[in-house]
Image 1 (spheres, rainbow, N blue to C red):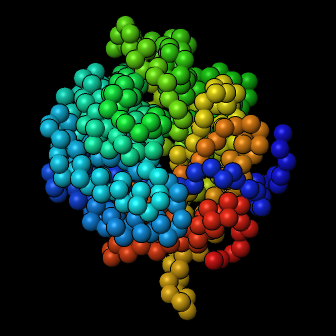
Image 2 (spheres, helix red, strand yellow):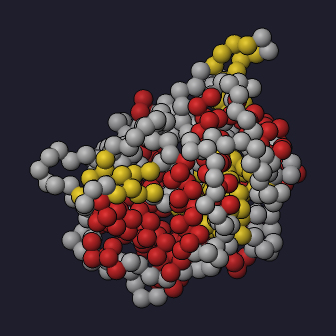
Image 3 (spheres, helix red, strand yellow):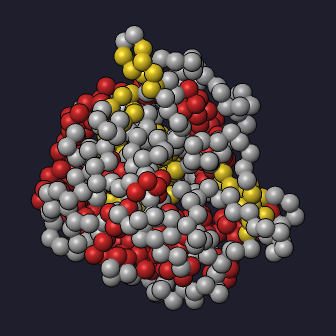
Amino acid sequence: MTTGNADYRDSGLDFPADFLFGSATASYQIEGAATEDGRGPSIWDTFSHTPGKVWNGDTGDVADDHYHRLDEDLDLMKSLGLEAYRFSIAWPRIQPTGRSEANEAGLAFYERLVDGLISRGIRPIATLYHWDLPQSLEDEGGWTNRATAYAFADYARIVGERLGDRIEVWTTLNEPWCSAYLGYGSGAHAPGIMDGESSLAAVHHLNLAHGLAITALQDVVTNDPGFSITLNLHVIRPVGETGAEAARRIDGLANRVFLGPLLHGEYPADVIEDTKDVTDWSFVQEGDTAIINQPISVLGVNYYSTVTVQMWDGVSERVNADGHKDMGGSPWPGSRDVEFLAQEGPYTEMGWNIDPSGLEELLVSLHDEFPDLPLMVTENGAAFDDVVTEEADGPAVHDIDRTDYLRRHFTAAHRAMQRGVDLRGYQVWSLLDNFEWGYGYSKRFGIVRVDFDTLERLPKDSAKWYSELIRTRRLPETPGAY
């Protein structure tokens, strides 16, 4: 067991020379240009334009206008010293209907992005799917439709043929838990469906899409890249006599329903039993789990907070503090009897508890289960209510809370490495303030501030702190301001 400050506020920790420091974004959240150069509509275009779905009626039509400010943003990344950039490719920018011929303008944009990264010494990590499904495919059933998984493999092949000599790591899916359960179960995310059976069908077809896409990419890439998937695995804390049973159920739905087929080649039997009143799982066909169970070279891990659970007594008012926006449906099919208790603070502006020990626990537990599988933190960061102050040398954002958050979570990652975890890198979420899904522009995760009126970029103190970490490879002290 490593030692350090109990609050994870360590400093002076050294990271290996080959540890990959970077930052991450997602296409719909930053690109804008929603109807330009042949891009088709996605489910998030439809969802955000539907009254009542997104706070303040915000949409991603303009977002950060990254599509038109690409060179400026690439220069910004270089100025911060980023060694890697994890971005996502908008499927409807490549195939406007999800089945159409490749859109040359879309491919050319991502080619410019990748070449711009490489010319600046930044390694490209490409995510093929960060939730912006072409609306035409949703009209055919979206991720409840098995055919979508095969369409995704065709899309992966198109992108792989164009960029398959330059991408460092290919990530098939970002957080399929969110796509399936928030999109088709709770209704909090696009396409806004509230149906337990649909959410579980989506789980399987997303898993299947991953396996098919890995195979498609392997057929066309030429530069020996890494292959990956990014999961938002839940760190679950049981409480009381019924906590263990509640944790088992939620672990099944949140974690093992993905890790099982992806890395063990089978779905957990207890999850199928737990959800038998929701679905008979007939959407799983013979041979599917073998397709899903493709070798990957690194597992992406997204971490923000923990959850605390017990079984609901059925009498008292049920507590549902699971950290997700409540739109009426449930992201936990078959687990209505599980209660999510409020977490101890402090909290970010998302209402998520701040607990860096959860990241260390998660990384160590994954290493214990899959000792030969390298890991990478592909998202970690925090939303806070930033304030712009006018200084003698210009405007500044002294985001002390975010800098402290990052310091503590990098400490957690370092401790996990000291305990034997093969952690290859860390991609901070997010490079830019952006469209935060159902919360619109009300939540700021960026280490770089974006003025959503002028679109001006302003590195916050957290960006300067992170830049120092990258330059020195040593966790800095955290003074009040930079």
